[in-house]
Image (tube, rainbow, N blue to C red):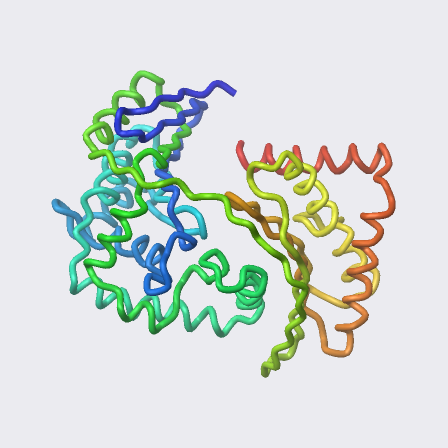
Length: 350
């Protein structure tokens, strides 16, 4: 894969991959997420993601939303525990429109107080709707248990109480403390020549004032075995089982990705799906996941089942884990697992 790599004096990096096609994609990824929040800031990284669309020094909210939609493009953003991303998809002739817009909302947003108050209600509704979904809520409960009393264990959305206290100053302080220009990457994929994307990138990002912060430091994560049961008025029992896992820099993470896919990945032929759903009809939703972070990681298995099948489902799950630990993969099994991962990657990035 031929990539164009370039770093500006302020530290913002460019990664561009030229591919044929009419549609292009780009985005700015910032190494700042919910794990960088203090306790009073709980949820502010996600709240800022919302507020980036509410007005800049030269655009009102309507003009931000219309800038790409008027030409059939799409502008969006997301927040994770370790990053914030603003991204766009559009026709290749609208590259400059997209790049300029992303730069504008990231570095020139003014966060009007009136919009802050309105968006608080929107985010609190988002939190409440999330609390109504036990199949999603259990993942937050699980991470809070694994990473007890740590920022990385807290949910991304925040709480109604924390969101109500957000202000223009708190938003500005978080950005100033965490939006490090040396930890930003502008990613681009599309049919645009290297020299043109480099010129556009330089035009819209080179004048951004350098902002640095101390890099995250590695922490020591201690695992304490625990079992928690919550009683809720739901038809299904929701169960999650897991532990700490390898971080982003650990060479063993690729083997972990492979094993996770074999156990309960995307395919309907995963071991957990075959044993819990296909063979025994015990569960509809079955999955395992592996999420590596900067200095730690988390592995989990989730399923939803009727209360009368809960213990049996847990026993089958533990049996599948034991099988992975004690029985080596055969040559054919390993080859199939690798080919499946390659196929997923090819579909994802084609």
